[in-house]
Length: 187
Image (cartoon, rainbow, N blue to C red):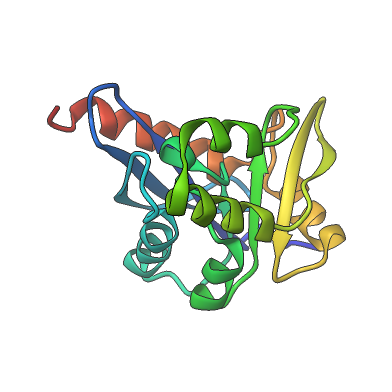
């Protein structure tokens, strides 16, 4: 059972058209909903640096008390595919990726957008991701992948951090922070 003071670091991104960087925000949020810190970073649109950007963001928060990393996408910034197992290894805590729409996956989109080594790198990272599984959070269905914990434990964590709707609070706050920062970033 997750205690009210348990913390998670949620990470989300925002992109503004015409920029080659996507804004990342990290929000440390307690299970009882109290926001306990923010940090910012960026990754390249269409690049391969999102995994490094996320691990840097975790390091920048300097919050070892944030027991979980919750990411709001597996391929932010136009197929900049996250390597969840690498994030887990570098950050030494469970990583749970949550997406909010049913889909047939990203492989067709990746194949349409890239070729050669860029395609192969993204497909390898995408195929290395754990299985995406549906679960109910509140009245919504979300899709989650977990590295560093069993899926039942990941489900309990997501339930503990979801107060209304189907978006876990650390991801919801990070998304708001990323969008707000993106509005004020230079074009």
